[in-house]
Length: 427
Image (cartoon, rainbow, N blue to C red; front, side, top):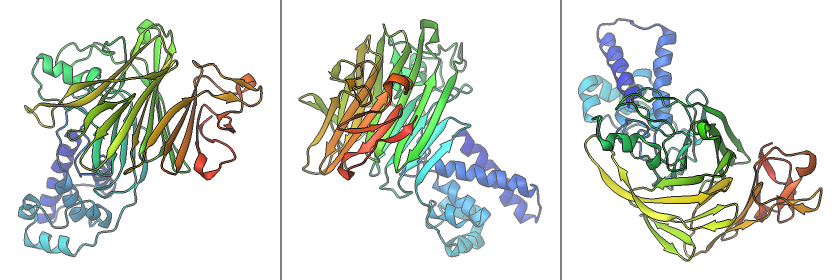
């Protein structure tokens, strides 16, 4: 939100300077401002609102993108902006600006993978249309006072519907709600022993800023891996690792792993969109929204775990707060905790099962606490995912499931396409 506030201030300088035929910025400085506009574009949900990270509000940014398209005569920015200037922009730029904007063509921007290495973010979407699917991953510095404890946080949209969300911030006052909404336990992150990993000193200052590291953002054969680590629990001998694997845009595997001592409670929290209702059917959580239905299933190294359905706060704007459904999953003394979220097909059953990982070279099953294997079947689609905890090679090379093998820590296979080998997303 504050990026966008500053961007709007630059737009006003550019607008007024043009009225006086003045050049207040060098060309490379204007390019920086244009890049800021593209950063705003990339950090939008399918509904055109800015990503609700840190102390941000849930605000539509098409007015900013419209001004950017007009000021820079940019046909790509016009595609993701308003078709016609919004009222405030029309008031600012007048009849001449309205006429120019109307004649400016709009050139479609393709979806895809955006790796923001400096900010520790990764964003994937299949288009910039309102019915797109979208994945956002964040593992970076807590930043200044506006930063939240959201290392390894993930958000998901299916077909333009919000599935996993951020919780917003509600207030800056030094009250319980401020700390709760800044804290890790209402973000979509892994948690150890139900404790915060970065204690607050006051409403703005953290007592410590544990490091993020090891971010890996990969897309290969349209299969996705977002991975990261953070050191927030190193004082108790735990380095946290999260792997987000997407064999396709609406099958998401979220696997959290303890590197170090596993004699702790490892938890996951997932806050769902406002329109998603959750219920338990057998050993599966079923979520239903306005546009789609989804299945959620969780596992640790011993097998299936049934999540608890709870409520979690949501504050889309300052001084406004409500609650939506969420899941809390707990396991004790397990190296990993994995949750799989799959969009269901109409009138078709989704099956998610865990399988032992087989080592072809030595003809043996890998230990349950060393390797994870999953098969997700949906209609004619069938995907396999293999996650190895340690390095591969030596006595643990060529691992796989269902007779398909590969040499890598994170691997995926589309079994319905009869692959010869696993697709290795990370060696």
